[in-house]
Figure (cartoon, rainbow, N blue to C red):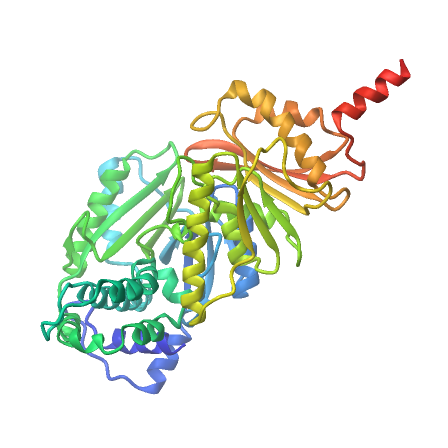
Length: 503
């Protein structure tokens, strides 16, 4: 809450518009800013809109509307809850809604439609959304300050001319690099970072005082904001292109605010979302997707953290559950699980030693972030990585509660031909290690034809309860939710022996 008040204080002193006069800051101003209600839009994995809506209701207590435009949800919050919004695990990008038009009447002639977009820019209620953007941007400035300090500490010599020992610098860098270079989300999740960094760098902060003073001076000086307009359009009845809408609407925004257009190095990104007759104007609150929060060592098929979270929620983990990803790749699913469901134990396994090494490195990075968050050495995380054969897992029969994995699609990894043998073997081994009656599995694949065939031969041990269709890198894939039946696992060799006796 203190950060929000501080950001609001800065907000009230800054001119967002050339003709806007300065406002005297009072306690009532701060209170009114924190109680300001705004509509937030969020994008997430297509197919998991309901999962995102459920998380918003649980963590923010806000009602949520799922957009007709797939992959988007909308909810109302107070400004003081802005930090919590950035902590949502199921959303990729965030934006504050300027205005929504449920049934926008597009004219038939392109020139008239584009003229309407030009006129629209000056009629929109920009004030409150820009306040939210300014508060959101203040956190990024704090992050930039810390990064500048870190760059100063990485120099070979300090102001007094003495050589900085390499090992001392590496110790500081080991603990601070993740905090200073990570996404803005880390600041929201780890409010102790600022204090931790100050403790670690100690007296070296004094040497960077001049540079930080320069930064503060630059921030207080008025400057012309740079912006761009991004148009996301869906529907076949429009007589204009996305580029044409962004160009004409952006020109009007530039004339209204006197901002400078810049397509790459921009401060403000204005969003123009069009889906059939629905038009929503917004201002982006994230520079890059929040799904990049966990993974530092990427592989050829790294799963998005937001998609991994959605899959984990489908299996409804309970305290002390054993959750296994037998084909973990870089470990996106178990790492997300260890972050959100800390009272469960997560096992990441793969047959590729390179994949296991990447998963181990990602786990180590997560552990470092956890240590910074706690402000002290950690005993560890409820997760481990191991190399194994998916068809012969080194796990006891019935010892696993949940299996969540991303099966090979047969494109970047494996092949469609190999899947015909791999999928049945995987389902059979999963049924052995999974607890009868209570065990469940959530499996993602794009090779639905092969999976359906494999599942049809395993109906005695697996029962399908749901299928969620998702978009993965432009591919239409399915997430299958399975329940383990009460039937005990019987090894194929034992089945063959029983048949021989009968004959």
